[in-house]
Image 1: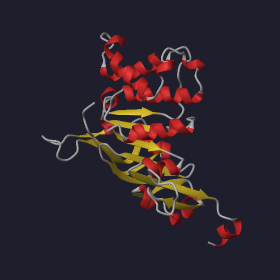
Image 2: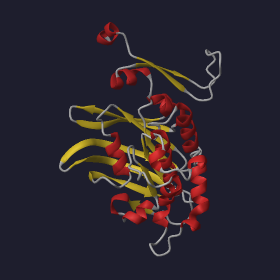
Image 3: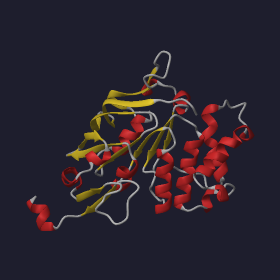
Image 4: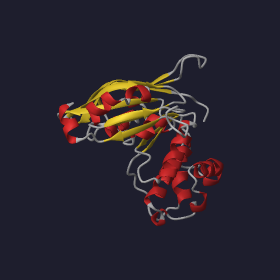
Length: 286
């Protein structure tokens, strides 16, 4: 996978039927960067993510793929909503939050399914894709379970198998809905490190703000007012996830501990976010 693509949302409004769920979403993701979409429950994070992947219709605005400036030759641009399913699947891989895995399929068979967009029905052979599949399995540290049926896996291992399938798809854009869900702490951190170093254009939703501030290059904050979600801001995590916004949007207090913060006895390798629920009397008066 050598192609590099930017992903851009332009004044996106998404909903169900004629009823909008979230509006005013606008941001640009550069190649090799990770964008984390965070926000309160019901603000539209998953709906936006599915619209970015081209699997949920949009009401207005648009989602576009484009070669980055300076990539050489004429700049090509795609409207994601107008792309065919197979063409889109060669550009964007989507890992859903709660995808179904057939219990009798092995991990290797599930990951091999990620190669389908790159084949035709009469030419598909698992042997032709074995190297890519093995690499994706190793990336998610599932080598010991490659021949294990998915029905015998824990929830966390199933999630890693789904993520490995996304890697096997070898797309320049990788979109993941709550990828840390079901994973133990080691595999949460390991996954975020892998995504950050992948060279792909990565967009994820996260509830864990500490993961967002530690690994994302930018965060998109969504909030819900009444029945409608909207974008509050898009900025670098250490700028966005400061106490005023955390208190206003999430109802918590927070402190950003920077990497190599001189106030800490043990130097940190990345920024961390310290959070607590405010005391009731403090919450009511501020």
